[in-house]
Length: 596
Image (cartoon, rainbow, N blue to C red; front, side, top):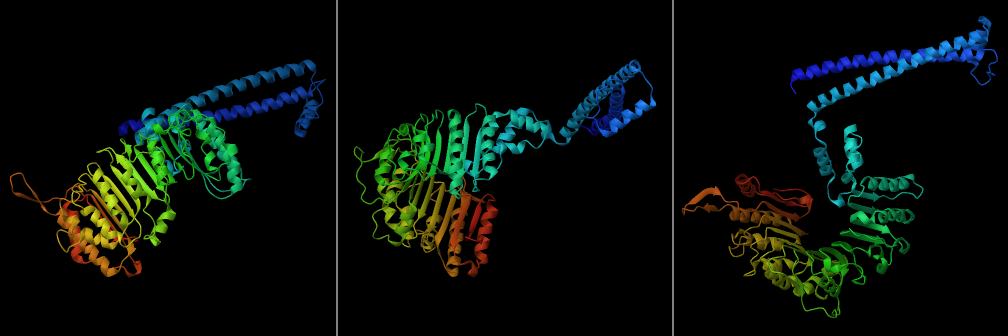
């Protein structure tokens, strides 16, 4: 819209505003005259002979009637004639007021249309088609379920009239409901409002597939027990259309677990409190299409009647003993992502009918975590404990070659290195992301470095390597400068497609040692990424060859009160790498601040 058109629209809008102001003034005058005629009619009818008692009228009206009688000597017919004349005046004033009101509304509609055109020129979002605006709303409201109820659809209702109409008319915007029920007194009226809010929200979704996430914040136990049944009633009411359901920290009793069909539920996250473990899944027996489950399975009998395990694609749960893990994996041949929390194994009995190895033809992601109490125990008594759960599990798992792309192991000790290396060799042709979380065992560094130095290990497809709670000895072996054979990271054949390398050193180190390690990281990185790139004609290209590496993150733990200084030479090396390729991110520092 050009400036001349805008000027014409503004002039027309000003003209309409003046007309509305004039009409509004005339309407007010007509309403005032109508009120005066109404009072006159009341006086005439009250003063007429044979009029009913005026006790119910205002004192001022009664006084006016008495004065009218004294000043006017009229008979009954004259009173009737005068009353009829006043009624005709009232009808005329009423018609005039209605016409003025109609004219004002018409002018206001024209002014709103002109103002919308001007707003659309200044703010293009106002003029967007409904379909595009709906898509923008859906994008703004999207996010991970764990993010909380941060951008609810009601936030769109108070912006403008059109946004409110579009939001209320789009059922899909209301298909997701997330809420944290906070701790408050049982008599707090907010509890009832939360219940009503949930019902109104889901009702606006109509027949759309629903996603519901509820978390009952720990605190007042009476509040939790009082509110949980009311919210579960709403869940059961909409069970026929729920696709994703997450309930956390709910103080559930067996009386709340009356079963309801969930014919469309495919993702379930259920972590209740204070409930008999064998009964906690009575609410979700009828789930024929469930494919993703996340819950606490400690001491739960894994009966096939609970779920259709054979169709499960994603599973996260525990803590389990090794025998229970094998039994569970055997029931899920279609599993593609498994995250298992393994408790103390001890002398786990063999599972009847369980084969020596579990075939997992579709497994793409595997995470094995140790229970927190087991990790803590292994730290202080690593020599006397039996092998960890993941060490017992890995030799028994048989993923299809070329399928497993992501592996995460937690609680790794030095003694676990041979088993982990053997498993990595079996999946080296497909593994793209490896995450190792070490136990705080000082001996783990040497053996962990040997994992990657094993001849024939391969890992040609590994693009992301994340190491947590490693030791400074591991960093020394990875970036060492004593010899080319030991400097793994500087070798071009070491993890050739590595794009992300993240290391967190879990032990406190001395400032002098930190400076040496930072220097080693700088030299090895520069050597790996700064070699000339050979051209096809046999010559060399002067441009630095950065390769696939895009993120290098090495974090050390040291006392921030004695933060060391990094040499200018090392800073220059990192600066040269950044200048060669501005997409490369380098973070070398402490847990509290960045050094480079």
